[in-house]
Each structure stands twice: as structure tokens, then as C-alpha cells.
Length: 122
Ligand SMILES: [Zn+2]
Ligand SMILES: [Zn+2]
Image (cartoon, rainbow, N blue to C red; front, side, top):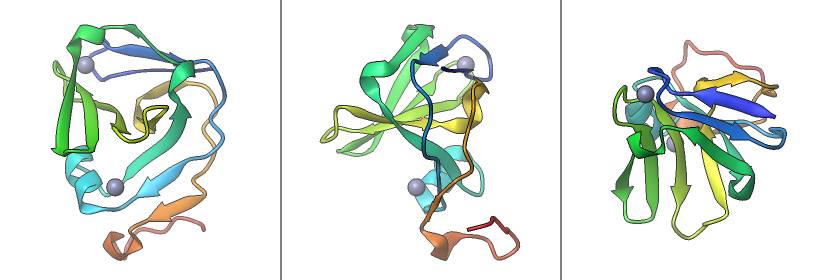
């Protein structure tokens, strides 16, 4: 089981399974949305994901018509994203995980935007 929360703690969640795969994405949208060098996320089975508290604080932002980025309106922490054409999958933002095992990333996307000073084992 995986548990996590936003920065202010109003939003908490549980994932009733293990995380098998993690991905780093260097695309410009992830960099802007996270305010950081990359997004670290994992595709999860939505049916096993549960917002335990604070669902009313979640806000969805559609940067494109097909993809929502969901964040805590109180503190701004990104929690997950989803695509409207893939309703069974969410992509959890792994910096919000507080307990459970997170495997090292096995995939790096948009390497053309990876800063040259950053080294992550392939
Ligand atoms: Zn929050
Ligand atoms: Zn991205």
C-alpha cells in the first residue's frame, strides 16, 4: 500500500496496490507544472486509488483539452494527472508519497529537455 499527501496535508490519499513502475518526464509542461527539473510519476490503476481526505480542495487544470493536472488549491501541490481518453489510469506525482516502496525510474521521457548537469542511471 502507498500513502501520500499534499504539502499542507489537507489532501491525503491511499493506493491499495504496489507501485511497479516509475517514470521521469523532462517535458516543458512537467517542468512548469512542478516548478522543477522533471516530473516523477507513475501510472496507477484508478480503481485502487482513493482520496482519503480533502477531496474538495482538489482542483483540475486542463492545459490541453485531453489532460487534467490535479492539485491542492490550498498549497499548490500537484497530486496526479489523467487523460480524458484513458479514464482508468491516473499518473501520481511521486514527490507526494509518504509511505510505501517507490522503485527507481525505468523510463525517462523528453530527454532533450534534461539538464546536462543531471545524472540518473539508465
Ligand atoms: Zn495542500
Ligand atoms: Zn511531461
